Length: 279
Picture 1 (tube, one colour):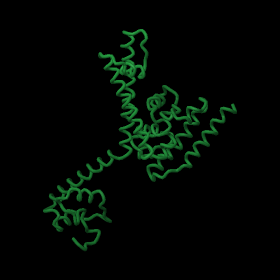
Picture 2 (tube, rainbow, N blue to C red):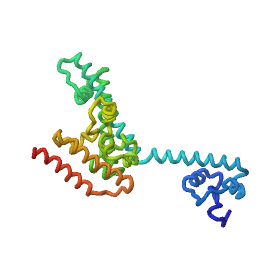
Picture 3 (cartoon, rainbow, N blue to C red):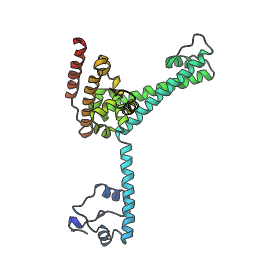
Picture 4 (cartoon, helix red, strand yellow):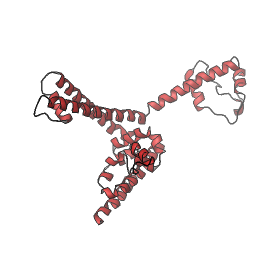
């Protein structure tokens, strides 16, 4: 088919039928100005023996292209960040739950038993033996793993979403990306949705008429919200969510660091918190 017009070229022109990677790439990146009799062209060019053979090849190439796309999506930086922050949260949650069990168990044996992960660490490193100490060592190991994962998230989140990480902090940025399902999905969400990510149960209760509208979700932990008087936290959460939504879009579509976002947010929050003084 050398020298053929663009409108008569098949998807697989010049592609080795046995080269799965090449046929998958042809499906992923190929295009045509207008429809054409692709099976006929494929047979005439010698790519396929007949129309059925062409569709078999098309099916194989499409499946290979889909597998490649899924692999690329799963190994993308934002997806790896999601796995890390979710694993960190799981380790912290399980460590705290087991620490409560350790405290209850230890309380039945020692009058001076304490509570929390730190107490479990003390028991784990006491040099004693037995199932209680063994359980305490599991708490210690999970706490250590959570700390390692947190450090990983703090290193990698700024690489995946530099503006979002600068405004929200790496861990909160990672949690927002995880709640949205990815950086692309977060970038497509309006500020109002970003504001209540993580508060889905409260939002659904509100929609059913059983609770007031939530003012914030996981962004509640941000200093811009925490450092604002409760009466003005709704305003602070809206301002923060607005800037975070913009930051996510910049990170997804360009990845360019926009330091003016930091200054804009700081100025907006300062004005909101000034109301606390005036009042």
